[in-house]
Amino acid sequence: MTSTMISTMISTRKSLLKMGARTWLPRLLAFGLLGFSLAGWLIADEQRTAPDLTVHEWGTFTAIAGKDGRAVEWSPLGLPRYPASTDLPKFVEHIADVNFKLGLRGTIRMETPVMYFYSPREVTVSARVAFSKGLITEWYPHADRVQPEGAMHDPRLSQLPVDGRIAWNNVTISPNLDGQLPREVESSRYYAARETSSSPLRVRTSAGEQQEKFLFYRGVSASALPLSAALNFDGRLVVKSLSEDEIPAVIFFERRGERVGYRFTGALTDETTLDPPVLTGNIDALYGDLEEALVAQGLYRDEAHAMVETWKDSWFEEGSRLIYIVPRRFIDNVVPLTINPEPGQTVRVFVGRLEIVTPATMEAVKTAIADNDEATLNKYSRFLEPILAISKELH
Image (cartoon, rainbow, N blue to C red; front, side, top):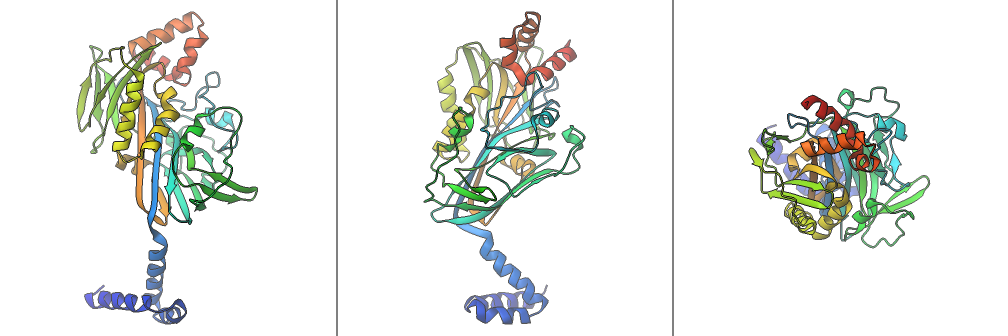
């Protein structure tokens, strides 16, 4: 395209914007192909941006490290005897029945991403999310489309022919919306995510209107992680970045009964080695440290608090694990998000949870199996299969 053509287009656009739609639309169409392209440009320009709309999202990637420190393939939704906690309200929608989901095999369980919207005025948006090498398995409110559709015959997520996707086409963000949010009698960590100042939203469905404080979804994937973490010969944890991006924060955590300990490090750009935590830590201090790390990544204070309240009983349960802030570019590559109109600000903060199979964990599981100690086995529940496999591999 020549500089003369570009100048003509810019001049034409300025002239058209001074006219009413009834005046400029016929003339615009008379330009032929150039006019048609320009019309698309102008209309898209109006629809694509909403400077006063803000979107904040948080979520969790859960995985388990093999002996080389990289995430191994497992059943992220649990085994039939030890399924993952059914911690969602019944109004949440599912891709398929529990038997199908329990058979899925991948590397990552993406847990409770929630997407908050803030707007001083009512605005209708669309939101689309994809999950590389993965499936979207749960969501709320009702989505217009979830892919892939139909039956799946191979439970290995690495063999998916297409990436999973979900789309909400008409979500109305309304700061003055005053409706009843769905709530069931039983408790659920789902409700803690509502404790923010985000604008309420509504989605119309064939069964009526659904209201919520966020868009919620979950999924499982066979994607790799941006880091690895492996124990060396003397029990220290070697953590390596596997991407070009900085890992903003890293926590090595361990719980044995009521005793807890953790080591909190700053940004990781290459590799670091962490000593085992001394189990004399204060769990409340850890909650505060993690909240500060989340706020530093762009979450509002009440969002960071809601995230910790949602997941603290899971993140800091029995065992050893690496808790880390996932690099933003990794999130955008593995879970690409598109919102139309484009918000003035979009913040996405995910926490990674990488289970570390330590000698203490292997011994605890081995003893529990020998003693038929269901209470201890339930503490490790969905991680039992990979713990036993890694234990066998190491011995």
